[in-house]
Image: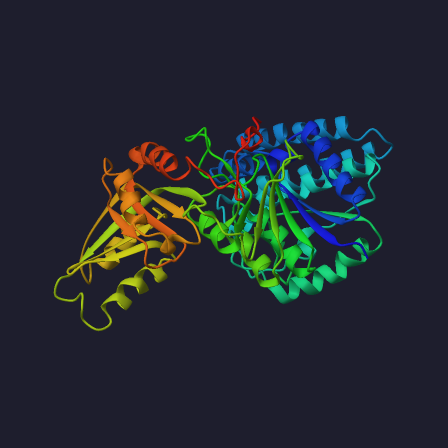
Length: 472
Protein backbone atom coordinates (compact mmCIF):
# COMPACT_ATOMS: atom_id res chain seq x y z
CA UNK A 1 0.00 0.00 0.00
CA UNK A 2 1.14 3.57 -0.71
CA UNK A 3 2.26 5.70 2.28
CA UNK A 4 -0.68 7.54 3.86
CA UNK A 5 -0.58 11.33 4.15
CA UNK A 6 -3.34 13.10 6.08
CA UNK A 7 -4.14 16.52 4.59
CA UNK A 8 -6.22 19.01 6.55
CA UNK A 9 -7.66 22.03 4.72
CA UNK A 10 -8.96 24.94 6.78
CA UNK A 11 -11.95 27.17 6.13
CA UNK A 12 -10.15 29.57 3.79
CA UNK A 13 -8.93 26.59 1.74
CA UNK A 14 -12.53 25.48 1.07
CA UNK A 15 -14.32 28.83 1.31
CA UNK A 16 -15.67 28.85 -2.26
CA UNK A 17 -15.46 27.11 -5.62
CA UNK A 18 -12.11 28.72 -6.50
CA UNK A 19 -10.51 27.60 -3.22
CA UNK A 20 -11.94 24.07 -3.48
CA UNK A 21 -10.69 23.78 -7.07
CA UNK A 22 -7.22 24.78 -5.84
CA UNK A 23 -7.47 22.21 -3.04
CA UNK A 24 -8.35 19.49 -5.55
CA UNK A 25 -5.21 20.36 -7.54
CA UNK A 26 -3.06 20.07 -4.41
CA UNK A 27 -4.52 16.66 -3.57
CA UNK A 28 -4.05 15.46 -7.15
CA UNK A 29 -0.42 16.48 -6.86
CA UNK A 30 0.01 14.24 -3.83
CA UNK A 31 -1.62 11.32 -5.67
CA UNK A 32 0.73 11.82 -8.60
CA UNK A 33 3.64 11.86 -6.16
CA UNK A 34 2.74 8.30 -5.14
CA UNK A 35 1.17 8.80 -1.70
CA UNK A 36 -2.34 8.03 -0.48
CA UNK A 37 -4.12 11.18 0.74
CA UNK A 38 -6.78 11.19 3.44
CA UNK A 39 -8.42 14.62 3.42
CA UNK A 40 -9.94 16.41 6.43
CA UNK A 41 -11.83 19.64 5.73
CA UNK A 42 -13.20 22.45 7.88
CA UNK A 43 -16.47 24.23 7.26
CA UNK A 44 -16.35 26.99 4.66
CA UNK A 45 -14.84 30.18 6.07
CA UNK A 46 -17.07 31.97 8.63
CA UNK A 47 -19.80 29.29 8.44
CA UNK A 48 -19.33 28.05 12.02
CA UNK A 49 -19.78 31.59 13.37
CA UNK A 50 -22.95 32.01 11.31
CA UNK A 51 -24.36 28.69 12.51
CA UNK A 52 -23.74 29.73 16.11
CA UNK A 53 -25.51 33.03 15.39
CA UNK A 54 -28.48 31.13 13.91
CA UNK A 55 -28.66 28.89 16.98
CA UNK A 56 -28.53 31.91 19.32
CA UNK A 57 -31.30 33.64 17.36
CA UNK A 58 -33.50 30.56 17.49
CA UNK A 59 -32.94 30.20 21.24
CA UNK A 60 -34.18 33.80 21.65
CA UNK A 61 -37.34 32.85 19.82
CA UNK A 62 -36.26 34.63 16.61
CA UNK A 63 -37.13 31.81 14.24
CA UNK A 64 -37.31 34.12 11.22
CA UNK A 65 -33.84 35.51 11.91
CA UNK A 66 -32.35 32.03 12.38
CA UNK A 67 -33.84 30.72 9.14
CA UNK A 68 -32.69 33.83 7.27
CA UNK A 69 -29.10 32.96 8.24
CA UNK A 70 -29.42 29.37 7.04
CA UNK A 71 -31.15 30.49 3.84
CA UNK A 72 -28.12 32.57 2.94
CA UNK A 73 -25.81 29.69 3.84
CA UNK A 74 -27.89 27.31 1.73
CA UNK A 75 -27.56 29.59 -1.30
CA UNK A 76 -23.82 29.98 -0.78
CA UNK A 77 -23.23 26.23 -0.65
CA UNK A 78 -25.56 25.41 -3.55
CA UNK A 79 -23.89 28.06 -5.71
CA UNK A 80 -20.55 26.41 -4.98
CA UNK A 81 -21.98 23.03 -6.02
CA UNK A 82 -23.25 24.51 -9.28
CA UNK A 83 -19.83 25.92 -10.14
CA UNK A 84 -17.82 22.89 -9.00
CA UNK A 85 -19.78 19.87 -10.21
CA UNK A 86 -20.48 19.79 -13.93
CA UNK A 87 -21.16 16.08 -14.29
CA UNK A 88 -24.44 14.22 -14.00
CA UNK A 89 -23.74 13.97 -10.27
CA UNK A 90 -24.54 17.68 -9.80
CA UNK A 91 -28.26 17.04 -9.26
CA UNK A 92 -27.54 14.34 -6.67
CA UNK A 93 -25.10 16.53 -4.72
CA UNK A 94 -27.52 19.46 -4.92
CA UNK A 95 -30.25 17.28 -3.39
CA UNK A 96 -27.93 16.01 -0.64
CA UNK A 97 -26.90 19.54 0.40
CA UNK A 98 -30.51 20.71 0.23
CA UNK A 99 -31.62 17.83 2.46
CA UNK A 100 -28.92 18.70 5.03
CA UNK A 101 -30.16 22.28 5.21
CA UNK A 102 -33.77 21.08 5.53
CA UNK A 103 -32.68 18.98 8.50
CA UNK A 104 -30.83 21.94 10.02
CA UNK A 105 -33.87 24.18 9.63
CA UNK A 106 -36.05 21.65 11.44
CA UNK A 107 -33.64 21.68 14.39
CA UNK A 108 -33.72 25.48 14.50
CA UNK A 109 -37.54 25.53 14.40
CA UNK A 110 -37.62 23.15 17.33
CA UNK A 111 -35.05 25.22 19.18
CA UNK A 112 -37.12 28.37 18.65
CA UNK A 113 -40.15 26.59 20.11
CA UNK A 114 -38.28 25.29 23.16
CA UNK A 115 -36.15 28.39 23.72
CA UNK A 116 -33.22 26.60 25.35
CA UNK A 117 -29.89 26.13 23.60
CA UNK A 118 -28.11 23.21 25.27
CA UNK A 119 -24.50 22.28 24.52
CA UNK A 120 -25.76 19.12 22.85
CA UNK A 121 -28.02 21.07 20.46
CA UNK A 122 -25.26 23.60 19.81
CA UNK A 123 -22.92 20.79 18.75
CA UNK A 124 -25.58 19.39 16.45
CA UNK A 125 -26.18 22.76 14.78
CA UNK A 126 -22.52 23.67 14.18
CA UNK A 127 -21.70 20.15 12.92
CA UNK A 128 -23.57 20.95 9.70
CA UNK A 129 -20.72 23.19 8.51
CA UNK A 130 -18.26 20.31 8.20
CA UNK A 131 -20.88 17.76 7.24
CA UNK A 132 -21.91 19.82 4.20
CA UNK A 133 -18.46 21.10 3.16
CA UNK A 134 -17.04 17.57 3.16
CA UNK A 135 -19.87 16.40 0.88
CA UNK A 136 -19.20 19.23 -1.57
CA UNK A 137 -15.43 18.68 -1.55
CA UNK A 138 -15.90 14.95 -2.21
CA UNK A 139 -18.11 15.68 -5.21
CA UNK A 140 -15.67 18.29 -6.53
CA UNK A 141 -12.78 15.83 -6.26
CA UNK A 142 -14.74 13.15 -8.12
CA UNK A 143 -15.70 15.65 -10.82
CA UNK A 144 -11.98 16.33 -11.34
CA UNK A 145 -11.08 12.68 -11.81
CA UNK A 146 -10.02 11.85 -8.26
CA UNK A 147 -11.27 8.53 -6.89
CA UNK A 148 -12.92 10.19 -3.87
CA UNK A 149 -15.23 8.76 -1.23
CA UNK A 150 -17.02 10.58 1.60
CA UNK A 151 -16.62 9.33 5.16
CA UNK A 152 -18.86 10.66 7.94
CA UNK A 153 -16.31 11.64 10.61
CA UNK A 154 -18.83 10.73 13.30
CA UNK A 155 -18.35 7.08 12.38
CA UNK A 156 -14.66 7.28 13.32
CA UNK A 157 -13.98 10.11 15.80
CA UNK A 158 -15.48 8.65 18.97
CA UNK A 159 -15.48 10.96 22.00
CA UNK A 160 -16.90 11.33 25.46
CA UNK A 161 -20.11 13.34 26.00
CA UNK A 162 -18.44 16.64 26.98
CA UNK A 163 -20.26 18.73 24.38
CA UNK A 164 -18.38 21.71 22.99
CA UNK A 165 -14.96 20.27 23.81
CA UNK A 166 -15.28 16.51 23.68
CA UNK A 167 -12.35 14.28 24.58
CA UNK A 168 -11.39 11.71 21.91
CA UNK A 169 -11.27 8.03 22.79
CA UNK A 170 -8.03 7.00 21.09
CA UNK A 171 -8.45 3.21 21.08
CA UNK A 172 -11.97 3.37 19.65
CA UNK A 173 -10.89 5.93 17.05
CA UNK A 174 -8.06 3.72 15.84
CA UNK A 175 -10.44 0.74 15.63
CA UNK A 176 -13.06 2.71 13.68
CA UNK A 177 -10.48 4.21 11.29
CA UNK A 178 -9.21 0.75 10.43
CA UNK A 179 -12.78 -0.37 9.88
CA UNK A 180 -14.18 2.58 7.89
CA UNK A 181 -11.21 4.38 6.30
CA UNK A 182 -8.29 1.99 5.82
CA UNK A 183 -10.08 -0.37 3.35
CA UNK A 184 -10.82 2.58 1.04
CA UNK A 185 -7.24 3.83 1.29
CA UNK A 186 -5.94 0.36 0.45
CA UNK A 187 -8.07 0.44 -2.71
CA UNK A 188 -6.58 3.83 -3.68
CA UNK A 189 -9.62 5.94 -2.87
CA UNK A 190 -9.19 9.46 -1.50
CA UNK A 191 -11.23 9.54 1.71
CA UNK A 192 -12.75 12.94 2.55
CA UNK A 193 -14.14 13.68 6.01
CA UNK A 194 -15.19 16.71 8.02
CA UNK A 195 -12.95 17.89 10.82
CA UNK A 196 -14.03 19.21 14.22
CA UNK A 197 -16.94 16.78 14.64
CA UNK A 198 -17.29 13.40 16.30
CA UNK A 199 -19.83 11.39 18.22
CA UNK A 200 -20.27 9.47 21.43
CA UNK A 201 -20.28 5.69 21.38
CA UNK A 202 -24.09 5.98 21.34
CA UNK A 203 -23.96 8.08 18.16
CA UNK A 204 -24.72 11.53 19.63
CA UNK A 205 -22.94 14.29 17.69
CA UNK A 206 -20.11 16.10 19.51
CA UNK A 207 -17.44 18.66 18.62
CA UNK A 208 -13.76 18.93 19.56
CA UNK A 209 -13.80 22.69 20.19
CA UNK A 210 -12.91 25.59 17.93
CA UNK A 211 -9.96 24.80 15.70
CA UNK A 212 -10.69 21.11 16.16
CA UNK A 213 -10.20 20.20 12.49
CA UNK A 214 -6.44 20.20 13.13
CA UNK A 215 -7.08 17.81 16.01
CA UNK A 216 -9.14 15.54 13.76
CA UNK A 217 -6.29 15.38 11.24
CA UNK A 218 -3.80 14.45 13.96
CA UNK A 219 -6.12 11.79 15.37
CA UNK A 220 -6.55 10.27 11.91
CA UNK A 221 -2.82 10.47 11.21
CA UNK A 222 -1.97 8.89 14.54
CA UNK A 223 -4.66 6.23 14.29
CA UNK A 224 -3.45 5.11 10.85
CA UNK A 225 0.26 5.76 11.54
CA UNK A 226 0.52 8.02 8.52
CA UNK A 227 3.78 9.13 6.96
CA UNK A 228 3.00 12.77 7.72
CA UNK A 229 0.21 15.16 8.67
CA UNK A 230 -0.21 18.26 6.51
CA UNK A 231 -2.04 21.29 7.88
CA UNK A 232 -3.01 23.46 4.91
CA UNK A 233 -3.88 27.01 5.86
CA UNK A 234 -3.52 30.52 4.35
CA UNK A 235 -0.01 31.40 5.54
CA UNK A 236 3.39 30.00 4.59
CA UNK A 237 3.90 28.25 7.91
CA UNK A 238 4.86 29.21 11.43
CA UNK A 239 6.34 32.71 11.46
CA UNK A 240 8.81 34.37 13.82
CA UNK A 241 6.00 36.77 14.83
CA UNK A 242 2.58 37.91 13.68
CA UNK A 243 3.31 39.41 10.22
CA UNK A 244 0.43 41.85 10.68
CA UNK A 245 2.45 43.45 13.49
CA UNK A 246 5.96 42.66 12.20
CA UNK A 247 6.01 42.93 8.38
CA UNK A 248 9.58 41.58 8.40
CA UNK A 249 8.52 38.32 10.10
CA UNK A 250 10.28 35.23 8.73
CA UNK A 251 9.05 31.72 8.02
CA UNK A 252 10.41 29.12 10.43
CA UNK A 253 11.54 26.20 8.25
CA UNK A 254 11.96 23.64 11.04
CA UNK A 255 10.81 23.47 14.62
CA UNK A 256 10.42 20.82 17.32
CA UNK A 257 7.15 19.36 18.61
CA UNK A 258 7.78 20.96 22.00
CA UNK A 259 8.38 24.40 20.56
CA UNK A 260 5.33 24.20 18.29
CA UNK A 261 3.12 23.05 21.16
CA UNK A 262 4.27 25.99 23.30
CA UNK A 263 3.59 28.44 20.48
CA UNK A 264 0.16 26.94 19.81
CA UNK A 265 -0.87 27.11 23.45
CA UNK A 266 0.42 30.63 23.94
CA UNK A 267 -1.43 32.24 21.09
CA UNK A 268 0.00 31.22 17.71
CA UNK A 269 -3.07 30.85 15.46
CA UNK A 270 -1.59 28.51 12.85
CA UNK A 271 -2.13 25.34 14.90
CA UNK A 272 -4.69 24.05 17.37
CA UNK A 273 -2.83 23.36 20.66
CA UNK A 274 -3.93 19.71 20.84
CA UNK A 275 -2.84 18.99 17.26
CA UNK A 276 0.67 18.09 18.27
CA UNK A 277 -0.19 15.46 20.86
CA UNK A 278 -1.30 12.51 18.67
CA UNK A 279 1.61 13.23 16.32
CA UNK A 280 4.11 13.23 19.19
CA UNK A 281 2.88 9.85 20.43
CA UNK A 282 3.55 8.25 17.04
CA UNK A 283 6.51 10.48 16.07
CA UNK A 284 4.73 11.63 12.89
CA UNK A 285 6.06 14.82 11.24
CA UNK A 286 3.56 17.68 10.93
CA UNK A 287 3.87 20.15 8.05
CA UNK A 288 2.19 23.56 8.05
CA UNK A 289 1.60 24.59 4.42
CA UNK A 290 -0.14 27.33 2.43
CA UNK A 291 -2.94 26.30 0.08
CA UNK A 292 -2.70 29.72 -1.61
CA UNK A 293 1.02 29.15 -2.24
CA UNK A 294 1.44 25.34 -2.49
CA UNK A 295 4.99 25.61 -3.85
CA UNK A 296 6.23 26.96 -0.52
CA UNK A 297 7.93 24.40 1.74
CA UNK A 298 6.11 25.62 4.86
CA UNK A 299 7.19 24.63 8.35
CA UNK A 300 8.21 21.09 9.29
CA UNK A 301 7.54 20.03 12.89
CA UNK A 302 9.52 17.03 14.11
CA UNK A 303 10.57 15.40 17.38
CA UNK A 304 14.04 16.95 17.20
CA UNK A 305 14.71 20.15 15.27
CA UNK A 306 18.13 21.16 13.90
CA UNK A 307 20.34 23.33 16.10
CA UNK A 308 19.65 27.05 15.82
CA UNK A 309 22.24 29.69 16.61
CA UNK A 310 19.47 32.08 17.67
CA UNK A 311 17.99 31.65 21.16
CA UNK A 312 14.39 31.95 19.95
CA UNK A 313 12.37 30.50 17.08
CA UNK A 314 9.24 32.60 17.41
CA UNK A 315 7.32 35.06 19.58
CA UNK A 316 3.66 34.37 20.39
CA UNK A 317 1.13 36.66 22.02
CA UNK A 318 -1.99 35.68 23.93
CA UNK A 319 -4.44 38.52 24.56
CA UNK A 320 -7.63 39.00 26.58
CA UNK A 321 -6.09 37.66 29.77
CA UNK A 322 -6.89 38.56 33.36
CA UNK A 323 -4.50 38.71 36.31
CA UNK A 324 -5.99 37.51 39.59
CA UNK A 325 -4.14 38.52 42.78
CA UNK A 326 -4.88 36.35 45.82
CA UNK A 327 -3.55 37.87 49.07
CA UNK A 328 -3.60 36.05 52.41
CA UNK A 329 -0.52 36.91 54.45
CA UNK A 330 -1.34 34.64 57.38
CA UNK A 331 -2.14 31.57 55.30
CA UNK A 332 0.23 31.66 52.33
CA UNK A 333 2.79 29.30 53.78
CA UNK A 334 0.34 27.15 55.68
CA UNK A 335 -0.14 23.53 54.63
CA UNK A 336 -2.87 23.04 52.02
CA UNK A 337 -3.38 26.72 51.17
CA UNK A 338 -2.23 26.56 47.56
CA UNK A 339 -4.19 23.35 47.11
CA UNK A 340 -7.32 25.20 48.25
CA UNK A 341 -6.66 27.99 45.74
CA UNK A 342 -6.23 25.66 42.77
CA UNK A 343 -9.19 23.49 43.76
CA UNK A 344 -11.38 26.56 43.20
CA UNK A 345 -10.07 26.96 39.64
CA UNK A 346 -10.58 23.24 39.09
CA UNK A 347 -14.15 23.48 40.37
CA UNK A 348 -14.94 26.13 37.75
CA UNK A 349 -12.96 24.29 35.02
CA UNK A 350 -10.82 27.39 34.49
CA UNK A 351 -7.28 26.82 33.16
CA UNK A 352 -4.41 28.89 34.58
CA UNK A 353 -1.71 30.15 32.20
CA UNK A 354 0.91 31.54 34.56
CA UNK A 355 1.53 31.54 38.33
CA UNK A 356 3.76 33.80 40.40
CA UNK A 357 4.13 33.88 44.20
CA UNK A 358 5.52 36.40 46.65
CA UNK A 359 5.72 36.48 50.42
CA UNK A 360 2.08 37.43 50.84
CA UNK A 361 0.32 36.77 47.55
CA UNK A 362 -0.29 34.44 44.63
CA UNK A 363 -0.87 35.94 41.19
CA UNK A 364 -2.45 33.88 38.40
CA UNK A 365 -3.49 34.57 34.84
CA UNK A 366 -6.57 33.12 33.15
CA UNK A 367 -8.13 33.55 29.72
CA UNK A 368 -11.71 32.81 30.68
CA UNK A 369 -13.70 35.78 31.93
CA UNK A 370 -17.09 34.08 32.06
CA UNK A 371 -16.79 32.74 35.59
CA UNK A 372 -14.51 35.36 37.16
CA UNK A 373 -17.15 36.71 39.56
CA UNK A 374 -17.90 33.19 40.83
CA UNK A 375 -14.19 32.34 41.10
CA UNK A 376 -13.48 35.59 42.96
CA UNK A 377 -16.38 34.92 45.34
CA UNK A 378 -15.03 31.47 46.20
CA UNK A 379 -11.46 32.75 46.59
CA UNK A 380 -12.67 35.54 48.88
CA UNK A 381 -13.62 32.88 51.41
CA UNK A 382 -9.93 32.16 52.00
CA UNK A 383 -8.16 35.37 50.93
CA UNK A 384 -8.46 38.94 49.65
CA UNK A 385 -8.95 38.97 45.88
CA UNK A 386 -8.64 41.49 43.08
CA UNK A 387 -8.41 41.07 39.33
CA UNK A 388 -7.45 43.16 36.31
CA UNK A 389 -8.35 42.47 32.69
CA UNK A 390 -7.03 43.57 29.28
CA UNK A 391 -3.64 41.96 29.81
CA UNK A 392 -1.51 40.08 27.31
CA UNK A 393 1.11 37.35 27.63
CA UNK A 394 4.21 37.59 25.44
CA UNK A 395 5.95 34.25 25.01
CA UNK A 396 9.40 33.81 23.42
CA UNK A 397 10.01 30.19 22.42
CA UNK A 398 13.27 28.41 21.67
CA UNK A 399 14.96 25.14 22.64
CA UNK A 400 18.27 26.59 23.81
CA UNK A 401 17.23 29.53 25.97
CA UNK A 402 19.30 28.38 28.95
CA UNK A 403 22.34 27.87 26.73
CA UNK A 404 22.61 31.61 26.03
CA UNK A 405 24.17 33.62 28.84
CA UNK A 406 22.51 36.94 29.61
CA UNK A 407 19.42 36.19 27.53
CA UNK A 408 17.01 37.48 30.20
CA UNK A 409 18.94 40.74 30.39
CA UNK A 410 18.66 41.21 26.61
CA UNK A 411 14.92 40.52 26.65
CA UNK A 412 14.07 42.88 29.47
CA UNK A 413 16.43 45.61 28.27
CA UNK A 414 14.66 45.48 24.91
CA UNK A 415 11.26 46.11 26.52
CA UNK A 416 12.42 48.38 29.36
CA UNK A 417 9.96 51.04 28.18
CA UNK A 418 7.05 48.64 28.81
CA UNK A 419 5.55 47.92 32.23
CA UNK A 420 5.96 44.19 33.00
CA UNK A 421 3.47 42.63 35.41
CA UNK A 422 4.55 38.99 35.74
CA UNK A 423 7.62 37.08 34.53
CA UNK A 424 8.09 33.32 34.03
CA UNK A 425 11.11 31.41 32.77
CA UNK A 426 12.16 28.69 35.18
CA UNK A 427 9.02 26.59 34.67
CA UNK A 428 10.00 25.74 31.10
CA UNK A 429 13.33 25.29 29.36
CA UNK A 430 11.94 26.42 26.05
CA UNK A 431 9.92 29.54 26.78
CA UNK A 432 10.30 32.88 28.49
CA UNK A 433 7.06 34.71 29.21
CA UNK A 434 5.86 37.96 30.72
CA UNK A 435 2.59 39.84 31.14
CA UNK A 436 1.97 43.36 29.83
CA UNK A 437 -0.96 45.66 29.05
CA UNK A 438 -2.75 44.78 25.80
CA UNK A 439 -2.10 48.31 24.50
CA UNK A 440 1.68 47.72 24.72
CA UNK A 441 1.73 44.48 22.70
CA UNK A 442 2.60 45.82 19.25
CA UNK A 443 5.45 48.02 20.48
CA UNK A 444 6.93 45.21 22.58
CA UNK A 445 6.62 42.66 19.77
CA UNK A 446 8.30 44.87 17.19
CA UNK A 447 11.15 45.72 19.59
CA UNK A 448 11.77 42.05 20.47
CA UNK A 449 11.63 40.93 16.85
CA UNK A 450 14.17 43.53 15.80
CA UNK A 451 16.50 42.51 18.64
CA UNK A 452 16.43 38.75 18.12
CA UNK A 453 15.73 38.23 14.40
CA UNK A 454 17.87 40.88 12.71
CA UNK A 455 20.56 38.25 11.95
CA UNK A 456 18.56 35.05 11.37
CA UNK A 457 20.08 31.59 11.03
CA UNK A 458 19.45 30.63 7.35
CA UNK A 459 19.33 26.94 8.29
CA UNK A 460 16.22 27.57 10.39
CA UNK A 461 14.61 30.70 8.93
CA UNK A 462 13.61 31.51 5.36
CA UNK A 463 15.32 34.82 4.68
CA UNK A 464 14.04 35.14 1.09
CA UNK A 465 11.07 37.17 -0.08
CA UNK A 466 9.15 33.89 -0.52
CA UNK A 467 8.87 33.68 3.26
CA UNK A 468 6.34 36.50 3.29
CA UNK A 469 2.70 35.46 3.72
CA UNK A 470 0.54 35.52 0.60
CA UNK A 471 -2.39 37.93 0.62
CA UNK A 472 -5.73 36.13 0.67
